[in-house]
Length: 82
Image (cartoon, rainbow, N blue to C red):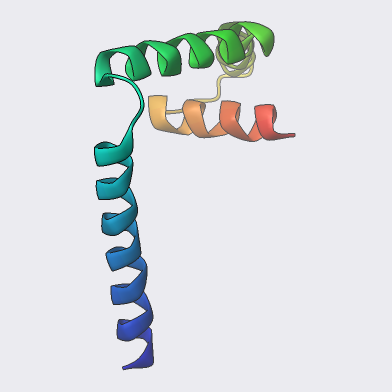
């Protein structure tokens, strides 16, 4: 039963944090989403994520390795994380 209490506390804290973030956000949601999109694009460009995805696909094709899209995404994430 202790685990249930911990899980409930974590979920309650997450809900409280999300609510506070929404109420106290200094900018409109549209502006915040634009900033997040720009940050993600900059990260992908900096780390050449599209190039890595293509390299993984080319490698898999060359060696006849069949991966689902999800498996490819997980592999790319593992490569980026190092």
